[in-house]
Length: 141
Ligand code: HEC
Image: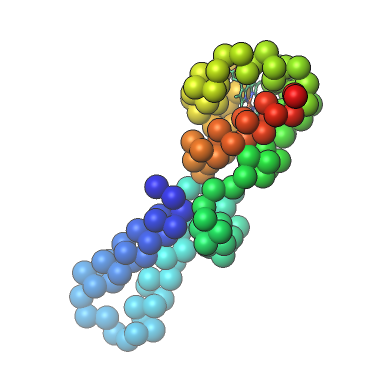
């Protein structure tokens, strides 16, 4: 489910709750009641900075580029090789690439040893994780 759908679901939920609550006193009261639900952030704290940011991502077509995800989420460990993380721009990635994307993606999603699930990007789609991996593999070429 992408962010846009999630936002719509949250809105839908808001409307459902508002109408099931019965007689609303005024339009303003309804708006007040819907507002916090409409802007609720379900997909991880990082994007909770503002609904505007999430909306911007959604209207831009959803997926962040591999480079963006890498910079925001993966570079913390992969830029310098924290805890044995394969280092960006090094032959580490040539070795890892030999495992094949399917294995790398599964390990990145589930976590492996000191590599946390989804590299701490709880709101990254599988495609976004794969894009970041491709970005790192490309860096070794
Ligand atoms: C907290 C540090 C940390 C962060 C953040 C992090 N990684 Fe890692 N990553 C590691 C470590 C450590 C390893 C080496 C694990 C091992 O093989 O023992 C690793 C390994 C990997 C591997 C290789 C898995 C394999 O099967 O060999 C992939 C792919 C990967 N990370 C992707 C990512 C992506 C994509 C992100 C960002 C969305 C990310 N990582 C963020 C620490 C991190």
